[in-house]
Amino acid sequence: MTNEERILKILETMQTEMKSMQTEMKSIQTEIKSIQTEIKSIQTEIKSMQTEIRTLNQQQKQTIEMVSDLIRIVGNTNAAVEELREGQFHLETEVKEIKEGQKSIYQLLGEHEIAIRTLQRRPV
Image (cartoon, rainbow, N blue to C red; front, side, top):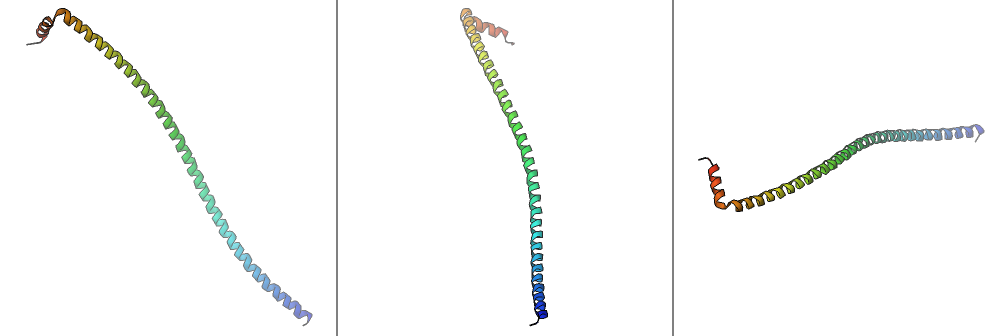
């Protein structure tokens, strides 16, 4: 084999290897484009999730404010109920005292006198 034939054979082998490398490069480029597309999709999903997280954080703040308001309202309501109970206790005490006073007056005047006066006040 002559030098020219050897060189030609080497060149042909190199050309075949170059074509193979070009095919591999195209395949790698296709994979890279696919990966880039996936990365863009993931970035879009991340942005969407970040937006959802912001929304959830805002809703959480609103919920916390509402719960705080409800706690304050319940506290106020409990205080008002306690005041009403105290007022009711005082009224019940006063009613008992008035009843006791009426009994004493009733005993002093006599049942008959009170019955007559009650009948006199009623319209006929």
